[in-house]
Image 1 (cartoon, rainbow, N blue to C red):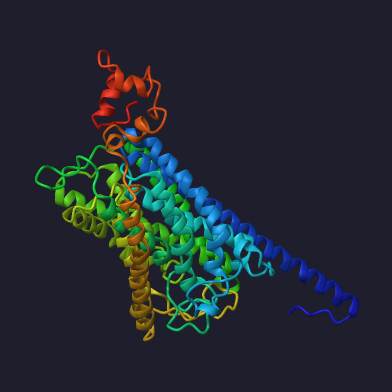
Image 2 (image 1 turned 60 degrees about the horizontal axis):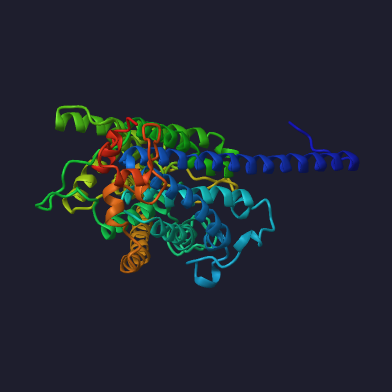
Length: 486
């Protein structure tokens, strides 16, 4: 048994040592949160490769530009306004939206990680992820200006407001608010705040921008998928996303301590099992129904679906339940994707199926499978007794009701913001690209030339003026095809 120091000199040394240890512990928390944010930011690389691989070659520069613009605008707007709306004091608005900490000027207590600079970096990485998901869904036919408008709105009025409801200390449904109006929402890593939000934005945007040229036949039916540029890019992007997802889900676990030493490892295992189970179910259904293997890029969506399924309950669900929860990801993607085609919604990367479909399932599954063990550690991420319906807790129905309510409200709120935005953009004729750009490719018409130049002897003028000796690569591009060979 350790005896506390009683001598005044020894006591002073002990207090000094204790203060030093606490300071180092706080430093490590901030350091780990910044490291986690850095890994989550790598998701931008993963989404970029996935989206570039999914579009035709003549739209490569367009996708690259949109993803860079997304990072620029989301960082600026989240610093100026978004973080204040998300984690500022929302008492005056009844927990709807924050009204302090704009420009991070209200940061006074470094021990409060949520409101610290490290907290800003981490939540901005979430915000940027939510914004860039939409770029792939509306690729090949949306103007850069329109996407820039969406990035600004997403970083100010969409992600920040929804995260204030769920994660702020004054949010009306927040796990951190002891006086929340309803049972706290189970949304550990953004199944609602990130994926349902981004998936709903993608759905509304795809509806307003319409399908790509040649996507419908003369009878108005969807034709076979347009050619993808490079399956290797898609697979590489998926693996980058899978790698980054460990920080995406487990990053907030740094806020836990004491009784939660194993939490981060459990989250990582649960994330892995969900991804594997979803990929396996997608592969099994595809082979059983089509009698042949799916395309590698399609299987990537099955794996990403499982990663999305893991988000809402990642810190309160035991890893073995990941097999059950993740196995639903594959069929959800397949069913939702077919429904979108039936209603003539052209989603280039199936962002709606992966993020909206599986984001909703993630939010609904968490209250069923959450642990029954109360978390008594006052420094832990979640301070309430997280318990599920299937794990013997009668209060699980309260959490299910809260998650259903927040999921529906998120979808309604996003629709209410994005619908008039897309309508105004379309009325101002800045939503969809020009016919010429869509026919020949944005890279050809609006940039200096194709993304891959080593086989080309001329620029844009050559493309339109030289009819005697057209380049075979240009011919493929102008005809709307790209196999990534160049």
